[in-house]
Length: 223
Image 1 (tube, helix red, strand yellow):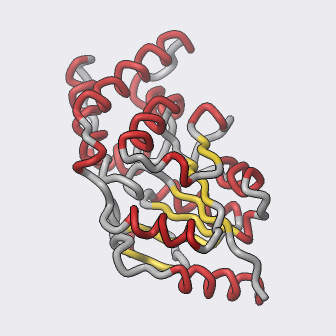
Image 2 (cartoon, rainbow, N blue to C red; image 1 turned 45 degrees about the vertical axis):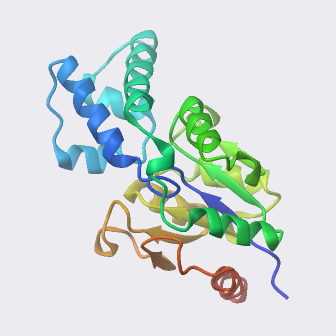
């Protein structure tokens, strides 16, 4: 009998439709600093990555103090314009309930700073569902490196191979696959063709059943 898999959620684009607000915040942020950021750069260098990785891509070689100030500025802009309750990915509350009913351990592994994770999860009253929440401060190397998903699996008492990762970003899918997890691509940000091959694709959580996760886990253990 297959063990109950651990389930690990990215946050932005998976739990909430926050990427449009992040894009707006980045645009305001860049205009404030007289910078131009193209959509391809956002998609390939920004989304799914930590501030400490993408900001130097735009600003070049800057001090740690300057980097922190810029990151704090950008994230405050985001929190000022984003309303989590109005941007929930459809079906997530019911899906979390079904996982909890089946005693499936859950984690969040996000590239966002802890302040954003606290703001979003507490606003939606779902913090208690998760056994652990990892944010950008918990990793040395951000996605697409698998560090965050390896750490999240360990925190759940699982191997990465016995976890199922929900991701919406190209970097995040790469991170989950590199960690050895089963990966469900959530198509809120990208089309299926833009991702590396995932084990399953969903638009939202409305029709997703726990049984499908059990089947993914059994298939992985049988390999």
